[in-house]
Length: 171
Ligand SMILES: NC(=O)c1ccc[n+]([C@@H]2O[C@H](COP(=O)([O-])OP(=O)(O)OC[C@H]3O[C@@H](n4cnc5c(N)ncnc54)[C@H](OP(=O)(O)O)[C@@H]3O)[C@@H](O)[C@H]2O)c1
Image 1 (cartoon, helix red, strand yellow):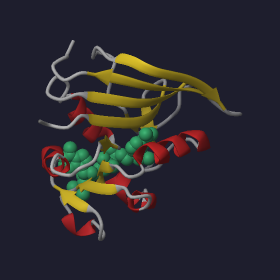
Image 2 (cartoon, rainbow, N blue to C red):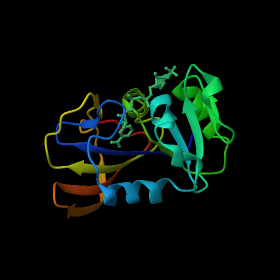
Image 3 (cartoon, rainbow, N blue to C red):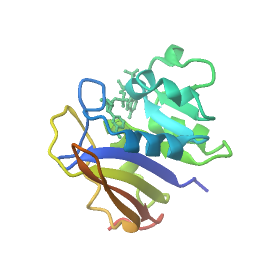
Image 4 (cartoon, rainbow, N blue to C red):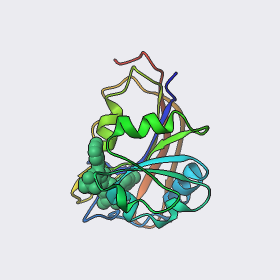
């Protein structure tokens, strides 16, 4: 039985997630949420995310980095050439699987709707923000919201929500 997949992402109202290889905002509350949610978990992520997130090796995380350059994975990380290859590794490990981006990896994971349960841990920032990397549209799927919390700092208002999509549900 394939494991459920937990996508975790922060995006702006215009679905921006990144700019020039970095986050386009500084949101300490969201960063803390991201670190707490992924601690001790399998973290599937693209090569750029891996290279820009040194803490992926801390707090018991088990990184699986998707890359054509297997030699960049440091001790403690596994490398895979594709999302299916990464999930084949993750399905054999005894732990929940978090999909940590970037753009293509989120997009490919969303196409797995209906084949396994998906959970989306979404931080939606209520602002239009400039960027070059995007969260693919997710709202065409029949998600059920299971948690919702509003928050804000001096710059942004944002919503933490958790959405679920059972395996077998695609519309
Ligand atoms: N706001 C958020 O929650 C969030 C989350 C994640 C990322 N981000 C932001 O997004 C940006 C990084 O994401 P990104 O999309 O540019 O890069 P990325 O996915 O982290 O890395 C891209 C690289 O990963 C490999 N790769 C990615 N998808 C693949 C696939 N489906 N099959 C095979 N290989 C694949 C390739 O590596 P090789 O070139 O080595 O073959 C590709 O060049 C940064 O700005 C980051 O801050 C934000």
